[in-house]
Image: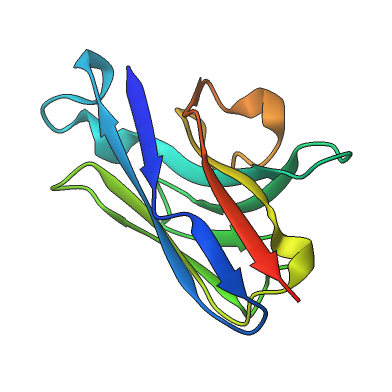
Length: 127
């Protein structure tokens, strides 16, 4: 199983970035990727890992942390085994390593509910 995130970089406050994540491996092969809730977490220096967004595999409902609601959008393409995170109106406090995650559970949002984690991509927002 591999979750490879990309799209991070350095951006000024107020700018935008779009993160992508490719899911590969036997666990997600065939049509199985659609059976997983997908999400993003971030880890900032000196802070605990923080939930950012998730998209439920069963209801297709989306969930966001209060800190990103209205600015970030999570989406998925099951045909391509891809997860995306569109980030707009970025703030310096959005800086961190963003990791995509998957869970076989509906409505997963807590760290312990996600079974597979990618290495992450670094997002740096300058003021």
